[in-house]
Structure formats: structure tokens, C-alpha cells
Length: 313
Image 1 (cartoon, rainbow, N blue to C red):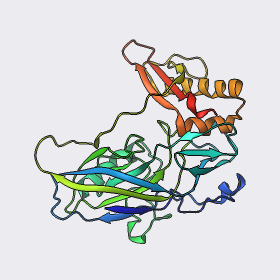
Image 2 (spheres, rainbow, N blue to C red; image 1 turned 45 degrees about the vertical axis):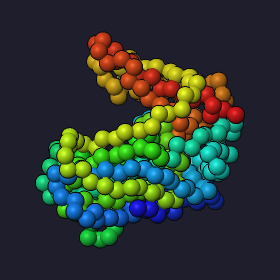
Image 3 (cartoon, one colour; image 1 turned 120 degrees about the horizontal axis):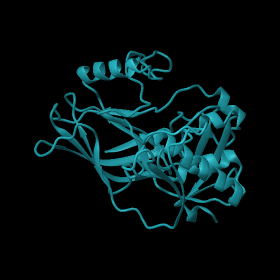
Image 4 (tube, rainbow, N blue to C red; image 1 turned 180 degrees about the vertical axis):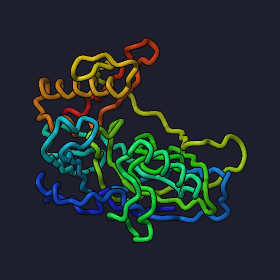
């Protein structure tokens, strides 16, 4: 089955868009193609998707909105990288000297939640004051207004942003409603682990899957996947431990360790490669790999933020 896909902001950002134009883009996200009903799918089954291939547009973009992403408190102005996608490489005038290899995948792949899962997710997310409760704002079609927002992934998949779901990968999703109701969107030409500035190299195009059902064996509670090996690449990596900005010690806090590692990599890109802070943040979002290097020696978990060296031309 081939799904034709719009980009994650529904074509509102284009080759002539400016940094300032980002402030006028409404906060829509993830226009999805679907749902596709799968004949015979019932709760208790597992939907299996084999990724056969992708096509992308010739244009892509990566955006920083004020305050957006994992290091959003360090960025108070909009920044837009416009990418030319040619063959297996993306280049942007906003990131001079950089070329990002293709790692095409659909960021959002999901099936419908059951009424029970919907209520469970709504209650648990409301209990912590989650930022994206059901709302009629930008809901489409209008009947979807009471529905869960697509921003976070859940048991039924959704906005997982797994860069390994490229051609040759397989994804398993536990079915919650008759027909499964599969939807796909948020196509990325390339993305780093964490998508840390809140966007990858966003683009439109198409995704082709072979869709089947499994009724025996292990049934996962959450999405599971199998991926082909990544090609070997030379890396530079910065590391971080759970130390807060004020120097306070955290205890095995992966968020703090990741923040330290990313800030270190950001500083390295500025000092050693002459990138602006905004360009460095974008490059980390579309190409860096985050690794939990150590998680058992309290209080200092260690996170590595690795960047493939072949991004520099």
C-alpha cells in the first residue's frame, strides 16, 4: 500500500519562507494520510508493516521556533533551514559546508486507539498536565476535536520518530479496534536521535508498506520493530552527566545528562566548525545520535551525543 504524504506543517513552509515567516505558521502538525482499514484485523491481533520504500519531494525544511525543542530555553528567535534534496544528500545555504545523508522514514505511523486506551491515555496525561490535551484547535476533520493530539507516541504508535524505520524495516503494532485503522505522515528525509530542535528535515512524498496480520506468538504492549544495520560511520561524540545548569547533582537523570551532552556538542560545532548556534542546533536535530552509554553507576549516568563526521564537506 502506498501512502501519499504531506509534510508535517501541511505545505505552509516553502523554499521562499523566511525565518520570520515561522512566527505566522499555525501550530498544526502531522497531517496524516488514512485511516486505512485492514480487512480482518481485530483487537488482539498484531499489525505487521514491512517498509518497502519511500519517495521525497525535492525541498525540505528544519525549523527552530522560539523556545522549541530539548534546548529551547537557549533559543529565543526563529530560524529556518531550507534544504535542497538531491539524490541521497541534503544541503542548505543556512548550514554552509554541511551535507546530510538521507535517512528517509515516516515519523508518524499509528493505528486507532480503543475507547479504553483513549480514556486511559487522556487521564494519565491530564494528571501530569501534558501540553497537548484534546482541543478543537486545528483539528481535522472537525469530528476529531475530542481526539488525542498526535504529538506524543503511545501504545498504538503515532509520532514515534524512529529513524530506523527505513526501507527493509518491519514494524509491529498491537491492534486495538476492528480494522486497525492505519494512518501515516510526518515524512523525514533525515533525522537525528531525539529530533532535538523539534523538527527533522521535513518533507512530503510517499511511503510504501506491505501490510499483514499476525495472530500467534508474542503480542507487544507497545510498538516493536526490526531494522536493517546502519552503515558504519566515523563519529565525534560529546558526553554529559546529570548536572543541572546551577551545578546541582542529579541522580541517574537521563534528561540532565542528555542536556549536558547536547550543550557540549553545540559548543564544539560553534568553536571547531564555525557554525552559528542556530545552525548547530539544526544539525544536531537532523544528524546527531544519542546513546545511553552508562546507566548503573549512581549518581552519574552518562549520555553520548555523537555526530557523524561525514556531514562536513
